[in-house]
Image 1 (cartoon, rainbow, N blue to C red):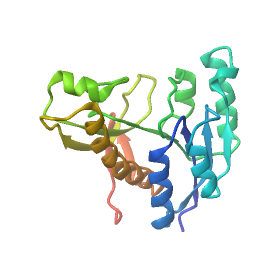
Image 2 (image 1 turned 90 degrees about the horizontal axis):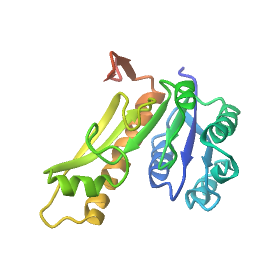
Image 3 (image 1 turned 45 degrees about the vertical axis):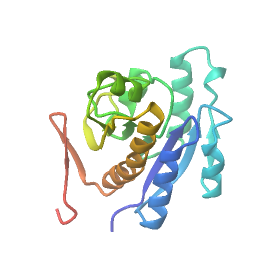
Length: 207
């Protein structure tokens, strides 16, 4: 029998992707449990949602630390106390140090609201509209020291409509994020992801 895996989720705000993951984990009876939800902001709305699921929540206020390295060291200590198999970034609005990222190499996932490698950083929907692309979307990837890069696990594509605004485009992309992120997390906990030469391969359930 496959061992039950532990997940720690990091959030900074409402945690809508966290909520999608929690719903899927519960309804699909994943062989995993979310050991903790940790936020760098005490006012993150997602903390209340996690508590409703009975998940322990913690706050590591980034404003309390003099620099990025000090914050990351404190955050790493809190994460490692749960001995997670996977760390999930779900709207965690911090740029992480290389040392932190490398500590979780191969076991930290992020979702970015663009079709990477296009439109890294912030304001991705504005970038897409400004560039005049016909398609936009979201990407789940393993986290590496290079910002918004790393082996791609899954992508979802949405058309850019002629009358789209940043808000309307963001809403359609977010719907797809809530589909592909839980799926990617489940593939990880079921040991179905392998990375070779920077390319992710998804192993079929029957091997």
